[in-house]
Amino acid sequence: MDERDRIQTIISILNETYGTLSWWDAPFEEVAIGAILTQQTRWENVEAALTRLRSAGLNTLSAIAAADPADLESCIRCTGFYRVKSARLHQLATFFLDQYHEMEEIDLIPTDLLRRSLLTVNGVGEETADSILCYGLFRETFVIDAYTRRICTCAGVSLPDDQLRRIFLSALGSDNRLLRSCHGQIVEYAKEYCSKKRCQECRIRILHE
DNA sequence: GACCAGGTCCTTG
DNA sequence: CAAGGACATGGT
Image (cartoon, rainbow, N blue to C red; front, side):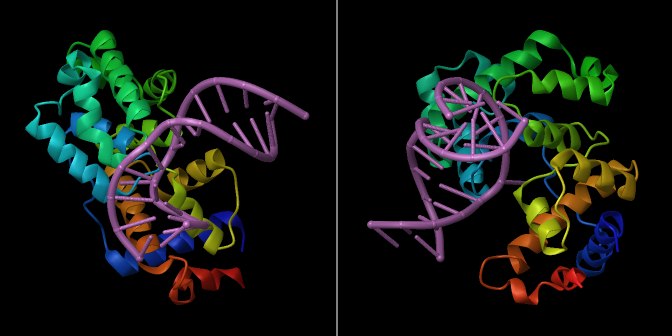
């Protein structure tokens, strides 16, 4: 059983377990903000920060670009790394506002070009870029994060991120709905079955044989 | 009180 | 280039 087969099997097990998932359904700007805030951070803490940002009227890119850093920091403190993240939010916001004036302009940019462009923003790495592209802009890409790696390792697949991404993409096809569903399934499954203590119940582990 | 969380950047060897 | 550290709060 090669890497590709194992990943195909992972996908089948996830589909049997959850069916198609609707996951991280949020407006583009909140996806972009959340993608930065969730770096190395539990989602519950990100939710709390998003709530604070909304109350403060700082849940849009233009508001963030114009905000006093201290205000931004106080809203996102609960996500940790708040000084770094405040700077990253500001950089991402000004990137979008400087480069594109309307969403229609963004929609015209091919995905790989937009991806490379996002990666030039300080504070935006591969995972953050793919999250914004996949969940915020409905593009054809796939998110490789700690959960994806953990599940793959469980299945006996250890490959560099870029190869994992290629294999998942070719296995899943170009439907954005399926791409986001699969990554959502991975997160749900990893949280439920691949935590430190109960990795025994993980069906994906069987692929080791 | 240690240890980890849906990363990324910068500095060293 | 690989490895190691910094960034920081909140939950187990």
